[in-house]
Length: 68
Image (cartoon, rainbow, N blue to C red):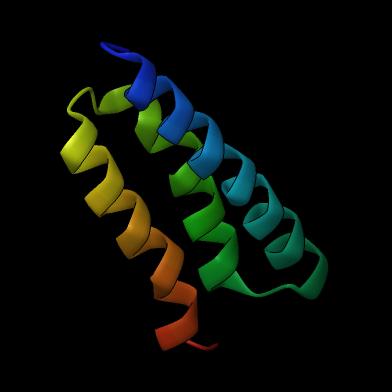
């Protein structure tokens, strides 16, 4: 992680991803489960803060629009 902002955003998205993962696992819903895994993993791979926020917001909104 390059900056403090990336670290904080990664922590926020990882925490929300953990909630999505647990919800998807408990309710047996694949979209929140996969988005939760994505939210926990992608902050490790992305170092640009702006890109981190954009991808994180997309993954946060995806379960709202894809309800399975």
